[in-house]
Image (cartoon, rainbow, N blue to C red; front, side, top):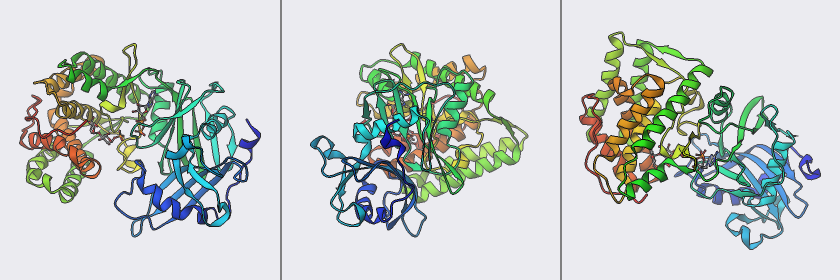
Length: 470
Ligand SMILES: Nc1ncnc2c1ncn2[C@@H]1O[C@H](COP(=O)(O)OP(=O)(O)O)[C@@H](O)[C@H]1O
Ligand SMILES: O=P(O)(O)O[C@H]1O[C@H](CO)[C@@H](O[C@H]2O[C@H](CO)[C@@H](O)[C@H](O)[C@H]2O)[C@H](O)[C@H]1O
């Protein structure tokens, strides 16, 4: 490890004074900023570590900063802030601003992940299993991490930020961080230790201990070279007028492999009447809140509610379900296909809007299945070249593939499947209204179908709505 990396401070007096006005402008513009729509009213420094000395040509701060958004408590974000006299033109898109107050006066600060040297510092620290200030760079037992790989930041739309090192590793730097065990490390690690080949096995990770609370800040995994994600692949096939049945079946098999391994690795529980009634009422509460937030949902509320009532009624008759740890936000974009045709599941963080406790609770595996079924529907409704029956054939093939590996066909549990799909579609309506209003017609078309559905297992889709641009 370099001399520079081993130098660290746990705080720099006045640092926030230098950064505050610039971060107020910059942070809300970031894709990964979760508090959109409410102004940032101030910052609290949760943790600060100097990874490269700020009085040198290139300084680097690792910061955990709470963005206050009063009256609600703000979220904590992980920032890597580079400090230079001036930015070279290649780093212009990474500019945060020119500092005019506090200890960094006269310097330029920028998003350091765009700069190879700071990105190298993170890999070097992981290689060295370093402890720097409150940061712990740790690795899976006996894992050698290759040195000298050239870093590049991933520029596609993400909820976090990732750096690819020489097409060998990918480091996901989590942005909104919460204390506790993060499923994005916990589940892939459990799956890898279980020998499940459907998930890139974590090689190393970054943790922090702050006020006695653990935080997962980043995860390093093998980079699946030349991979295409399921969403891109599905849209490509749709554009050619091709079906996606073989891939959907393979995805069903991959999902079942992951579920089977998760059920082996981590506890499973039986959900009886009380738990299922609670689950159904939580779904109803989310529906009510969603209909308040998105008026277009209101006409369908009674029909959607009936899906949750049917689930509670089945539980009242004595039906029980097995729950286990699941992916939690499974969709085509979370599946990568390698050039050799292998499917990998990634991004086990769960739905970002839910608390960590909720995301780590055992769930019926049908939750993930419902997510994927919705995703086929999304693809079919997002293409400029619709193919009749495309989503239905994918949905059927996915369920068949799942049944081949797990021995259980999801379609044999239509009441729970409808409830999970309805809950997901409601989540998507809120997600799209907030993030991509042009896409709202896609989940709304499913809402129309699900509101009329009587639990019949035959999967239906309604006519294509106004199309968003994929
Ligand atoms: N192991 C991997 N190999 C290749 N590409 C990956 C890998 N992990 C993630 N990616 C790429 O990075 C993107 C973002 O990863 P993801 O874990 O979904 O992050 P986020 O939570 O920020 O959305 C993915 O859509 C995929 O294209
Ligand atoms: O990938 P993320 O963890 O950030 O998940 C969020 O964003 C997704 C969109 O990028 C969103 O997924 C929805 O749109 C997808 C197409 O873009 C579609 O395949 C999914 O089925 C649909 O849910 C996801 O819901 C959200 O949590």
